[in-house]
Image (cartoon, rainbow over all chains, first blue to last red; front, side, top):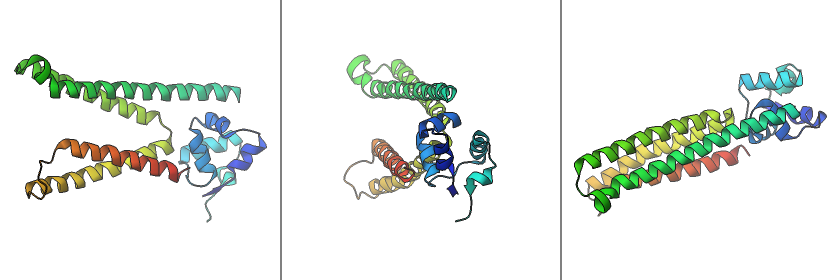
Length: 64
Length: 140
């Protein structure tokens, strides 16, 4: 699944480690989500949306 | 972000504590296995009571190790849990399928030695480790 996580993170000048701490997950997980290799669960997707103050569909795109 | 960093440190600290706990339980279990397997030969001879007590101790420590493993797994985030659970599923499947094949090789005398449980344990360990490496690489 495509997503804008890397862009949103870069806008805030956060490292992957910063984002991982904010979401209470590992840095590997943030990296895997950013590269589209891992699709987060719904609760984690909501946490990401809340953190960036966006709607889920503004961050994640389920179209291939 | 500072609050997040503190939170991260806390999270990493919790994960580290669970990992160390699992390592301690595993070392204790290995020691108790060695004691149960070789203790009667090296120390107390054929004293049945001591043998039973040591085996019970080994079993109890084994339960502790399983609980530590569950806590360790629960401390992981969702992706790492998925990676570990998939590796566990593969190693369990291989243990059942490989174990039965190994046993049948012994029962039909295809192999000139007895099928020992240690062979299956080595298979479980290796398959878990290899699956874990492959899964972690997949999400890298």
